Image (cartoon, rainbow, N blue to C red):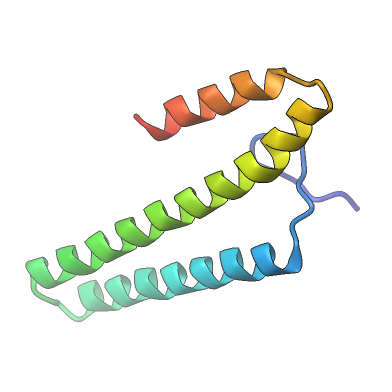
Length: 100
């Protein structure tokens, strides 16, 4: 059975190293989000919660940077080598969305 994607029919075969790194980062972020939820449930002080949310934002930004670099080095580079220059437009569009 084929995996469902939220936005695209394309898929990416990741190396074991890349996969483990991304999952590790996401698991850490997920734990941080659960921690903030617990803080709210336990009436934590606003600035303490904001500090933790800022850490989550930084972790998500770091995740995006790693994923984007991997994408450029693999997907984009491979497509360009195969003569598919449409991937450049796709990359530009993606970067514009990320910079909003």
